[in-house]
Image (cartoon, rainbow, N blue to C red):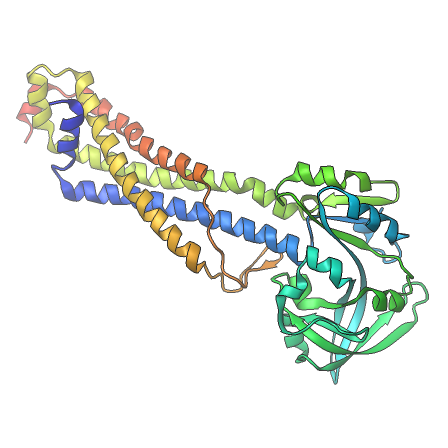
Length: 404
């Protein structure tokens, strides 16, 4: 009988202990597959939400605006830049925007808001705000606005409500009181929009702020992956000039970009923890098996089995344990992933990196990641078995035969 066949037979001499350890390996691998898919789905959801709700793939501002947010620092003659962006390879949409602080009031209720002026024709190619309407529709006139769902709840307003929007001219300080109607309510998963934004047409806000045709920002949607930093930088490079600054989203929100980079580190730490726990279980199983089979090993040694062959037998048993447990874990993990990829994982309106997870997270698996994790689990048990194999090598035939 070969060592491999003997190892397989020995594995089932105590099926209960084998089942317990094999289940631990299976559950560990299934958990890692779930974690891998969940992290991938959450990261993609986070990046997609941030780039499609306001941020865009990249943004262009007047030099110095990002560091100071001074409303006077505007992009002059934006028509030239917008025209160049239309012909720039890789640019899908270029949405001009302006920002201003305001006060929204109805009755005895009021709150500070961030007014955002935009052009719907270009904005729908970048942010897709219109796709996030929970009620109502897009502004049909200059005196209609959109508000975030949390802001609407705070002020107790709904579609059709008339509110007073107060905005100051950025140069003279004169206050403009504008009676506006709520055209629609948005739920974008972006707290900046949902909690404090009042969205209106570009031209009405330009008039209220007194900035003429100037704009504060151009948000871009690009024909590359949002994680392709070099591709984004190449497209926006011509717009880094003495007067304007173009930055990819990774530089605008470095915390999120760093989280994407650190995902592999998080995965590695989790793997180490899971491996350590499972390793203890494997060592325990094989050590108990060694004690129970001490007399058997004594007989094998007395019949001429070399210490090296005995150690190889123990390692093969560990390898079989890894194959069985990992196969079961891979099957279980893929089944769980398939189900969750259809139903999604509800996050209960949790917030992370400034994004509210109102919609479910759909796990995404990288085939390479699955292959690597599965291979690591399969090789884990033979490696851990080396500890017990060293003990098996040192078995004294005489003492082993007397062992009860």
